[in-house]
Image 1 (cartoon, rainbow, N blue to C red):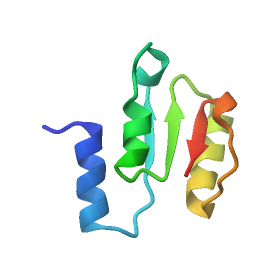
Image 2 (cartoon, rainbow, N blue to C red):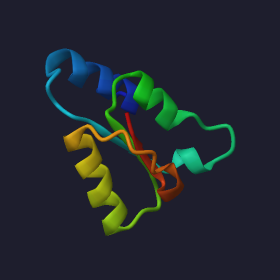
Image 3 (cartoon, one colour):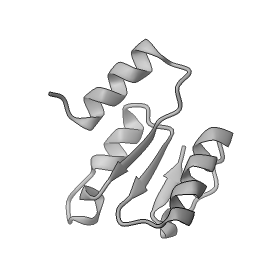
Image 4 (cartoon, rainbow, N blue to C red):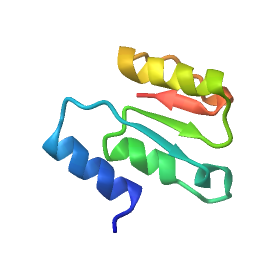
Length: 79
């Protein structure tokens, strides 16, 4: 058992070429910094729940292309 940040660290260490999109519903709760931490640990993008198909596909595209467009208003961002 490990949390998302530990999983991100392991994946980044073993397979550095893999692009990671962190998804969490915790970001919507006051004081939660789960997705900010995910980016600190190496996630290439983050997406907050709830989200629709369009937001998910846009987040995947941003991660795969390395886009740095700020779309946090839509619940996602890529670094």
